[in-house]
Picture 1 (cartoon, rainbow, N blue to C red):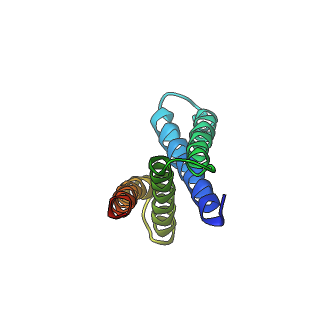
Picture 2 (cartoon, one colour):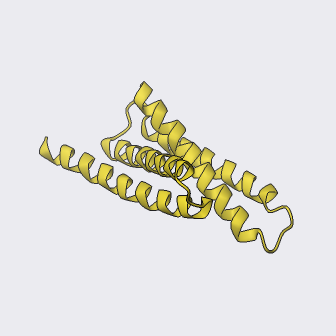
Length: 123
């Protein structure tokens, strides 16, 4: 693995952890007193799965299609983390930052996936 793929791995795992933890916690807030105790394990599982997908995609000898998916996961993580950081610096709420981060991350992931596909077809 290269430094770039490790960066993708970390950002994808962290972004999945944050998005799932906040989402589960907020959805269960009205039903469970300590909903964070459910949200954190759910976020850990999601983060581990996302990081595992990226690691699997960047493994030695992985086909180009798996690398495209891994790059997309990493790009999603970068988009989410940048949008959440911007949401923390600007006076917006956590929920709005997560929603905007998810949208930005999804658009960025789609763009990276498509760009990688165009690069493959150009060869």
